[in-house]
Length: 326
Ligand code: F42
Image (cartoon, rainbow, N blue to C red; front, side, top):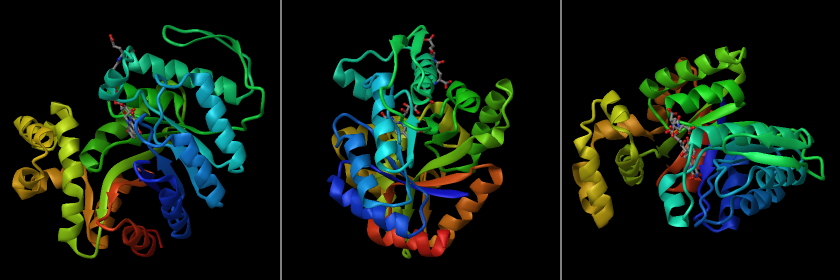
């Protein structure tokens, strides 16, 4: 098993570098930086992290093929790979529709676009001249002018077809989920894709990209994660809520409270314990360890501590290092 940590560059980059350095010292294997146009730029952030760390792997968690052309992505991640001495990982997903609407970008054929972009990026990273006439991604003989080195490609995926594609073509998959029930389903879909492509499913690193909150005081850990869980519930497909025995009607209530900024209602009972259990790894080190062990038994191979990590990020990173990784 490996351990990753996610940072959203809504914080200044030097602050993230401080946390990433601490995470490296505490034994984390990977740091993942999210990509949204309205935060600090993912590649600038990864570059600063590369200059401030020595061994931790550095990934986009995740970028997308709509705001950045596949050749530009290959050049950017190849640069991070060179600067970091071969520590880069490319995490790529189809992106977030709401963000693209705001940017005036139409979100057509996300699965096809992801698949064809990965095909092109693999070509660029291998130093090939890429000529491609896909449905969504086309190149007329483009080639990197420097050696990027080999960079593993991970996919951000939740849906059945995306997970199957990840099994077919990716080195790993970052799944926004925290509960064994979701991974039971996901692992089967990844394995089906791997089988289709004649691969051993074990070649695919299955990462639980989880809402994570740890503290010696379970109540503090819970209150730090409640708002994140509210957003997850509001954005989850009905099928996923039903899988966890949560009434899909709760989605509209929670979405409404988020829209009104009524955090009092969210924290005061609207986000139930069942929702916390379904959509976060949360509590004392022992609580978190118990959930992690359940996930490992099902086939998860990387645990990514995602937002909020804990009520106090620095303490939480040290606690994970000492009580869970160590
Ligand atoms: N998105 C960001 O924008 N930034 C981030 O930093 C980010 C981080 C992140 C980390 C982990 C993670 O798992 C996801 C993350 N995401 C982030 C979101 C990510 O980019 C994707 O939005 C998300 O993972 C995709 O969700 P999904 O797997 O449910 O895929 C969607 C597109 C879906 O609908 N999938 C369907 C499925 O079954 O898997 C397939 C739909 C399909 O087949 N579409 C056809 C096609 O070709 O695309 C077209 C069908 C037609 O007829 O039009």
